[in-house]
Length: 601
View: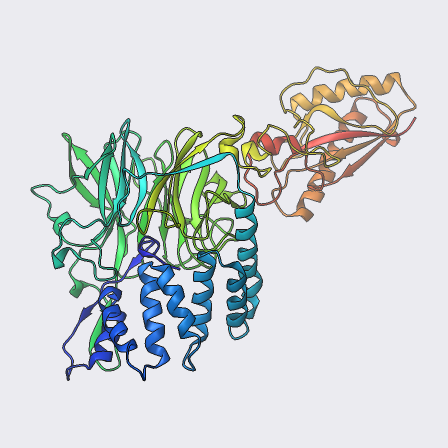
């Protein structure tokens, strides 16, 4: 279920032919075009061949493939239904047919085709795909009422329009393959439309974004340009382009067996554009582009501009395309790329990152979703992230949904090729009308400050409505009752430490005074850690913390026999900062504590 915008995730392959020893026949000509990703031209020939009475199933399959790869999903469904009836049908035809049926919301039929495919191939993946069908059907029946979706008709065209970013005070830039002329040189033979380029919009007036200068012929070449993202200052931009270097400088991927074609790949690269005297006139290559081995593209910048996130299929990732980041060092250069980790990346595709207040929005087809690319969000930074959360319907659909941005948390924009749009990909605005204290109204318990979005977390007994205790000074007087477990005021510990801090020492002195007044009390001092580090290590650390508190009380004159130190590790967290979840240091601090429990009096 790949459309043009999705295939722009990282790799756009352009292919050149070499002279054949003999003139190829009609079928070979169509196959050559298909291998060069020229589906628009190949389809015309395959359709003529499909009209013959003795047509074989492989021709029908190729017609279906062309429609799918060009993004005509209704036609693709029609032709895959035919293809699977032929003896020559490949197992993968059932898979693609299932993907198209899911996209077209034919859930029962999609389940059956997934089962057909996974009986023959990769059976362990069937539960994941069936779960996608179930999720799509369930979420569409129960949409979030907090979101209102609007097609941006004044920006969209009958072509592919996507990747909107903010530009200046009130403007936008976005990527589109709308045709600038009917010339053959302006036609991208993959789908018959134009090449992607960057457009700007102000007051709903759309014009071509001016990157071309008199001294720079880079943007004269007919390859894809976009998307484009800007620093807060607006004088620097990161532009994704298909590399323009001559094909002779690119390695040959393979030669076809009949020696009719040589295939090579034009990968994506990032350009850093700088505005000088009001004109975009300085362009340099992002330092980690590698046109021979992998692609780099689709950049996003942190608010301060010191972290860049991007998509790449460079070695060392989790799957096909991953999200990576670089940190700007003291010299202003970008440090080596680091993978964002397994909470973000999967064995499949992740791309189109954007950042807003330590929340990463991105698209994935490897995480549980509704089919195609789904938009997810995770909280954190760099390589430390909470578990990714699916934004569900109506933000997501059974189609490809991607490039989600938000500036003020009351709304924003995303791109999708869902049904009902004006073209293959359209830009949509969403408005949010949910609780003001819940960032964009996402209803899972981990979004706002690592809790359920209301400033509340889980109490020791699991209640979701108990207020998260604050690590700030508390002046309440200690009261101890039999069988009551309380939190000892301000007994907190530094990360990976069991030392008694000055603030904790003051509280222990208060406790010692109470114990001297009530000499028959026997206490358990229960200590805990946050969720970071292995649980076995945390258990030992919590025991050291409990013992340190006991030892301090003994030095204050309390009989050791009245005190029982007990460590519980990370087993009783007071909030949702579980393993793998991103939380601030203050939120983790809440869990590094000592509680009291009266054993007897």
